[in-house]
Length: 291
Image (cartoon, rainbow, N blue to C red):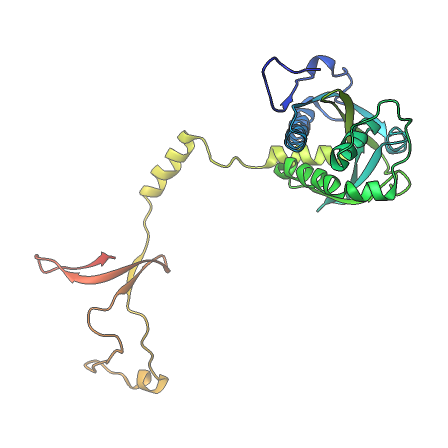
């Protein structure tokens, strides 16, 4: 196991040395780095959740990234494992999550309170067992969506089982995560279409930073300080019949509904920004005091 002495809690073990040279597949290295970072975030969250549920440290290591066809990936799980079909949103595409037999057995054992039996022969997962794992499947889709949120792509769990999955055209990028759960070793594979990974990487690259660099903000604020804006003090709330308006002439007195000293709206370029009060200054000038 990959646990450090006297260290509890999950950790993501860097796997750069174990990644195959061809891991980038159909994506340039910069795009692959962006997708790898999102996947690492998901695997870390998965290890943290398992640590919380099982109350024992869980390690997760993204061991390799490779390309594969969807048909080959769907058949790679074997008896006792699970394959989840995940619909991508808002784009049209499908991804897959493959839970190894060891991971499924450990999850079921934790849910049922039964100790795993290493001598038990692999078998197909029953419908009842799949129902017990529903919360885990939904959690995988939710946390994968959270990890891919910077690219604006989410995932929704739609089916379970190789027979329910529909192979997709084109190559898949397969992220294999090796996990140590106590005495159990397991794997979790996430497979996404290469086109979807490329789109996500481009979306991440095109997204503007939350805050611009400090020098840029300073230049923008400096330019704004020299700009001019139209400021108005407006007394709102009175109404007037159109006939009275047409009959108005110089010298007429217009009676307003508001009492003297009512607050005025301070509008900047036509938009209300403050409330104010009309005041007189000692030099005879009038002004608007912001409230």
